[in-house]
Image 1 (cartoon, rainbow, N blue to C red):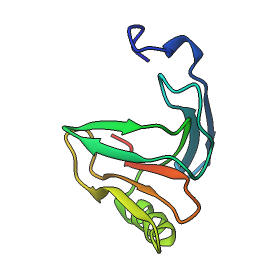
Image 2: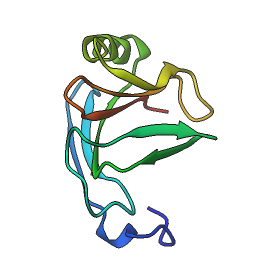
Image 3: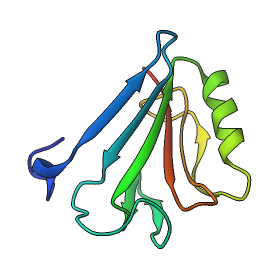
Image 4: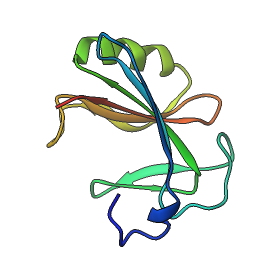
Length: 111
C-alpha cells in the first residue's frame, strides 16, 4: 500500500489460498473509515481508478482465466458490473462487480 494514500496505515488484508492456486482475499478500501460491508454504497471505475464509498472489497484470484470466469459467472446474476472481466495491463483477466447483496468483488488472474 503506498504510504501517501490516506488511511494506508489502517488497511487490513486477509488471504486464504488453496494448494491449486485459487485465492480469496478481503481488504479494507484505503481512505474509507465508514460504510458497511454490503449495501448502501457505490463503486465505479473511472480512468483505471476505483472510486467507492464502501469500506471493504472481496478479491478472488486464480492462476487461470477459465476458473476465474466460472466464479464471475456464478456471482454475476443480478449484479452490477463495475468493470467487465477482460484482459488488462497487469492481468490476463481483471473485473469488478457488486453482487445482488451489495458486496463488491474484484477478480484477477495472477500474473
